[in-house]
Length: 267
Image (cartoon, rainbow, N blue to C red):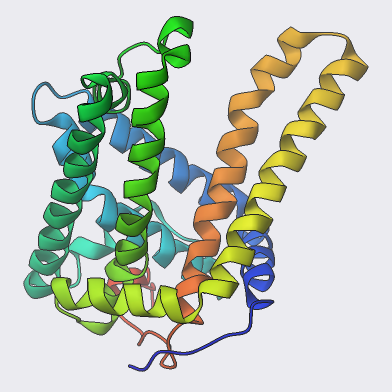
């Protein structure tokens, strides 16, 4: 495995590949993303340990979506079992992924804990416990400060974990080493990732403008409000589909074929 430097324009290619691959298997990719969101929501609702448990399983779940994107790009129909790819590649890989998940949960909870210093935990409560976000709370300078601090601290966490699940699953890299290699790959291709992020921001903004225009043409805000959530989930599905390509192009070696992320045939 060797890091691969790509030009900044590759960021736009990743976005196009993700969208194109999504539309090859739109029902499968959107369905898998809804299952992913549903799993996270159900786990988060478990008292006391739910939030930590959902955070710990997040790297494995995102790996499942990447494996699904890989299959869709190859013209295959991803089955729901692909979401469990991280847990069907042998005990060693499974334990490594669980360790990676534990590291992510600790890191994220630490970020939320540090943000709580600024607003007494209101922002963390909204995110982790699902506390209602009121208008008064959103206008509170302390809450806004905690929000920005949380976002600023989460960015380096996201960078070190960006490629880590794929490195652990497809290349057998140790969890701690995968964080290092992920950070190195993101730094090496920072220009492409910035273009990638900017393009996705543009896609989401264009989607919002299209919904606003539709509401104006129909003269019915109620219709638009009904479409907002499906539209956001659809674009989020395409985004998660594209993350596989950021990994595949950031390393010279393509992930080897593995039965864990490929549905069995009926030969």
